[in-house]
Picture (cartoon, rainbow, N blue to C red):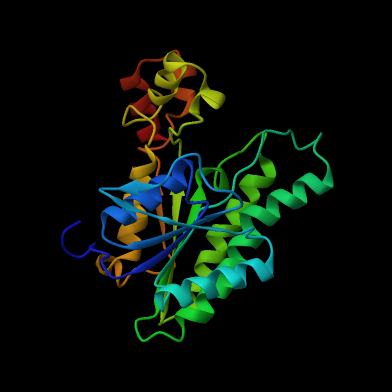
Length: 268
């Protein structure tokens, strides 16, 4: 954090940057020395700050083109530039695909795919005018590349974000770099709603090869790397941050020993 990933002097916009993973991303950029603007529809319960430095908050519904243009205009008016955009805002409540309404699915895709595209368009227009260009980091999910039961539209939207990342990286090069962080399980202040008490959270964490869920700053560290000079030649890439992924279900179901199973796989 002291050399190539020093973001001092950079102006960073983090959508949804006041809670959960977004707050962790905002804190990590603050720690790296950046000026951070966090937007959301409403402010967080607590200020996002590190070592006496706080993220600025600006309200914005990122699905609204006029609000998004106004957001970027205010950032440029205040700070003279926009160097980094982190498209973090998103999410979806649990709803089985057969039961959810078309309107529900449309809103999930709008928030998780079309809104990041909209914010990226407006940010890119500003970054293209800057001598140093800019960097866009999309926060994606492993749900975009594996089954996502109960959040099918969300998973499909995140798959779209990963595809969008590669296309924008080509269209907006060489001045603007675009990359994606593909995130697995993260422990936030709302983890208990998804995984239960501390025992449940620990049990879920133990299914991850590294033995725990990510913390928001784990995601933030990767976003800072992709936005920093250390990643100056990285664009159109996806960085998977999932602690090693998920242990294959067949290993738990198999009755053969691990060594026999491994030997059989190698022969196959």
